[in-house]
Image (cartoon, rainbow over all chains, first blue to last red; front, side, top):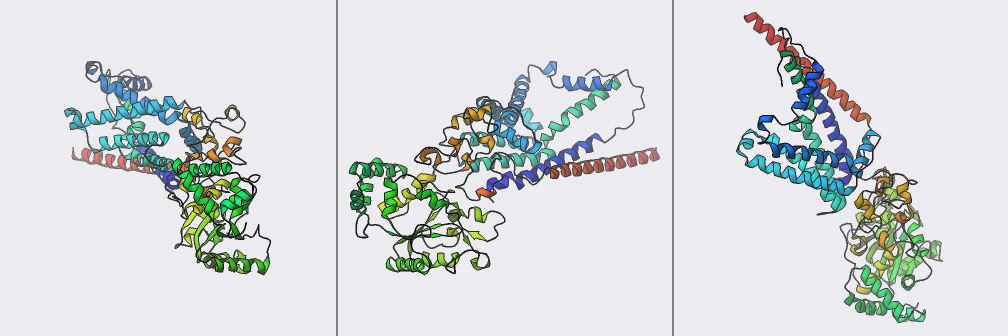
Length: 217
Length: 356
């Protein structure tokens, strides 16, 4: 079995199994924990409206910090959008999803996808360096923060190398690209990448709680 | 051609002009990635070469490799060069049969011991002492050992001889192996392909005739001059890949416009061969030129890399049911974790209420 065969076969299958088991395990485990019953009389509120409201308000920078966190905020959105474009609209990626889901969708021109990927890599590296050098960020960062960023950067870098055929034979680069994705799949449920699944339910839950207590947030 | 006649004398007798011969030498030097200054050396060496004895053994194969070579074009300088070797044993091409054929093989081996070229096409069955394929009552395995012993070098022609090919595909019932896994003490050149490109076979022979050495090989033992780049690297549809323009089916607009066949399973990006440049049928076309993706036939295990029509980026897994099972397992774990957490919390609450 070649490295590419392993990456496309058993490596991919088992990393996906770990990804699916891990996400559902952690998500259900968190969502099914009940809070202690609140005996206070609730304020007039709507669980749905308050929950969605906090999802929206937490997606924008808090007004008082707006100027100070502008770079982080804008670059954060930019690389997330770049990542989605790269992952979801590159032709060969769509083929990959189609092999799992059974359906595909139109791809974007490669020039657009490569540009998005390059911008995403540049921003992630800049943010990584900033996290290491900014005193406040450095203080609140742990292994999980750095490792999770590396797990996202690696597939992007190996993907660009595979697309451009730089550094090694295409089959080796493609195998390394797939293996880096599989490493990310395995890490995903157990590190901060899990925010992808957790952040919106958490904000919804917080918003509902705020509304019940009459907190404007 | 008489055995004592040089190749130059033979070609002259066949009416090949000096100009035509030098043109072939230039093309050969270019194919072998040699500098232009080496053309004269190639020409001198080829013109002075005496035909070497070649024994061609066909084992577990379909004769496609021989068909590829013999039905390639109308006579060309390449085919004359092929004529110019002394093909002393070849099942399909020799006139002799039965005991006479085997006697010819033994005579060639004795007469040219240590100097003859051994060409093998087809893989070698090794399970059950190799009795799945025999010639004149001799297993392919024994015949290979016996004939390889006195050979100067071995050229494994075709993917079966080079890497096992289709006979070695899963579940490989005959225990088929390539030449290189059986003979380990002789120089071996793998000329893979199913079948290989005729000019790659003649080019490899020309290199041997010119320099008396085997050419520079890639990591899989193939002449680097022919197998140094992927089909994808030299494909005329490559610009469409770069732009993300793919045919989604064999009869859609993309297919009609000649766009990239990656999504239809083309294995060009992982296949090293010269099809895109040398092409087939007198340089007329090659599979991608005819609208079908490359199936990767020059690579080891090409039959077992998933379907020919499955894109390289698609996963090769057993079943989607595995993922459904994973989801169920995850749900069970999650519910179990939550129930355990609830139980601990309720117990702590009861204890706290008891204390107060």
